[in-house]
Structure formats: structure tokens, C-alpha cells
Length: 475
Image 1 (tube, one colour):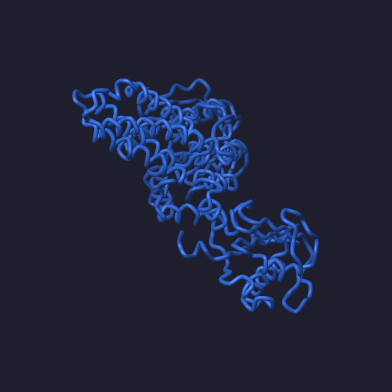
Image 2 (image 1 turned 90 degrees about the horizontal axis):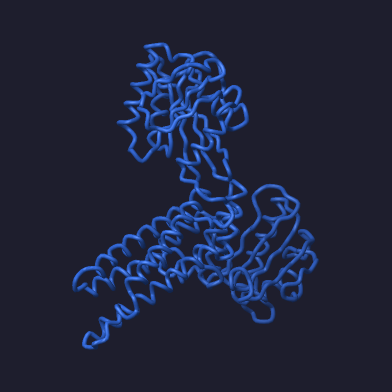
């Protein structure tokens, strides 16, 4: 632990603004003196006590509930005091200031400060203490933040599963199997004179193969969990008046973007997050792509291309009413060529043929070829929207029902991919004639380190700082 982890900390644990109830939380070692100073008496552990909260002059700030959780049986593993008062911001700030003042005040019995070093907590520091004191592992700590930030019901339920340890249990199972295999390899290295072939007798090939299969299963669920947490960025692109803003409004179920018959109405991006089967999709409507002499429109078009460059998927919108116009088709082909140049093959482009209600018999001309996914629809009537939603889920890689999925982050998926690469290298070493056992052992060690980084057993302080700094203060 760093030196700051020894300091007692205090913070308002509820969201900013007015509310019915607000909480001020204190965590530290041996906070009994502070409890006495704030509450005027000792408190029974884990029992709510209704009493006045008084300032240094004995005047009541508020009346509320005080709860005391002696360590290690608390959220942080340290002594924890929670003061539950009325949720006005002024009241909570007064309580926070009173805690800091009482911490530095002299205890009459000992002549020492009640709680020396008490300071305001940094973002996520209570949860960081819980991790450092082995109350939760790093994946569970991240799940707490993901549960708070969940934008869909499916994401919330998956984060709750991770918080209870479902994801960590999978990682620990992989780690234990990996440690057992490492033990066999190390034993062969340590006793080369023995005639017993430890690896052959223990079926090291079979164990490594089982590890890879289990890893693939965990990876698949982790990718689904990461999709629930992160969602995908979908950019709507196309010529002016193809119906991009109408499609955004139809998908969102609200009039978010201005829709007019005038070409170039949309000058800047309009963004909305929707959910399909619990998967967040960040839909972005952009300015129509064309050559323009209007300076403002040109800026909007440049921003549209910037959004397209950072997209996870692109909806290339076509106007069925203009499928007989040679100039319109040529412009579509030009946009398709630009998309092919600027986007990697891994970014899917979906052809969306809009205005089906006005031109139901119109023939389509795939500007980018026949191999891309496509759908005919009407943003005005909603016909075909369900087909587009299904395609979006398919290109996002959504395969599983939300039940049984645990939330995951991009760093978890990257760590599992690293594990897979190390196991692949290990399999190559094991299959070689006269395998280099020292290289095999090193690949297994690196795979274990990558696994341990997920739960925090092998993690740098810099990574911890990045993770917990994204938490809200008081959590």
C-alpha cells in the first residue's frame, strides 16, 4: 500500500444535488474517538441509531441515523461510520466539515487528535480500500462502477453477476488449471535426470487443450459482457435528404433531429443512445455527404467523415425514390469508394434502402457490391426497422441472451486475448520434437500473469490509479 492508503478518509457518498436522504461516510482504523465526538456516545456495531448530529458548539446540524461497522466486517475492511441525514447539499457539506473538524480536535481523554490525518477521499478510494484489504478483487471492484453506470437492464444484471464473483470464479478456475500445468513443467525442469516423463504421464497435451477450450468459452462470454458495457458506435451516413435524420428519430422513438425537405438541414452530428435486447447502440446522425460551397456545411461534412472513421459500424443510407437518377447513383458510388478507402475491412458497412413506403418497387443498385448486409425499410412508417435492428445485433457480435453473462471491460478481453496467444505458443512448444521446456514454462508464466491482471493479483499501481479515478467520490 501507498502511504495515503493509511489515512482515514471521509466523503459524501450520495450524488450531488437535493434528495430525501444523503450519506456521509468515514473509513479508517480505530475511529472510535471520532464516533464519540460526532455522535456523543459509542454506537452498537451494525445497528442504526437515531440521534442529532451536532457542530463543535453543540448546536444540531440535523437529526438522522448513524451506523458503525467495525473492521474487518465492513465494506472497506476498516472501521466505517455512515451518517444518514436529510439530502440537502448544504446539510451534507456541514456534516462533512464537521467530520474533518472533529478528526483534528483533541480527545479530552488522550490529549491526542480524535482521528489524525482525516482527509476527503479521492474518487473511488473507498472501493480501492476494499480491494486492497481483500474484501473484493479488481474485477468485482470494476463491476461496482459498471453497476452504477449501467445504461440498460441487461448491463445492470450482468454487472451484478460480476460483483457476486461469477467472472472472477471463471478466471480463478483457469488460473488454477494453469498453475497445475506449470507445476508439471517445472517438475520436469527441476528433475531432468528422472526417467519418469511427468508431462506425458500427466497428459500435458490434454490439459493444455482443455485450458484453451475453457478460455475460448470465457472469452466469448467476456466479449458479450464488454458489448453490454461499452455498446457500439453506429454512424448514419449518406447523401443529403436520404432520410438519415428520420432514421435516427425512428430508431430512437423520439424527434431528436430536425427533418425537412431541404438538403443540408443537418449541419452537425446528432447522437442518441438506444438499446436493442439490452445492448447499447450509440447512433450518430451526420451531415449529408456531398460537395458544397457552404462553409458551415463543409465543416459539418468534415466532422461526418471524422465520426465515420471512429465508427464500429456504418449505416450507408440510400434513397429508393432516386434509384433512377444517374447522378444520384454516381454520387452513391463515390461515397462507397471513399468508405472503402477510409475504413478497415473489420468495420461493417450496412446498406439501408430508405423510403420503401414511397417507392416499394424500386430496384436497388448496391454501390459497394452485393456482399454487404442490407435492408429495405421506411423510416417514416417503421416497416423494416426490426430487420435493421437484427442486422445491427449481428454485426455487433451479439449472440447470447443476457442471462448468465457477466459484465466485462475492454482490458479484460485484451488480457484474455494475451492469455490465448501465450497458450498457443505453449502448445507449439509442447508439440515440437524435443520441446524447449524453459520456453514452455515461460509462456505458461506469462499466461498466468495476464490472467492475474484481471483480478488484480498481478497489477501495476498505475493501472489501479486509472481504474479507481473513474469512480465517483464517496464510492
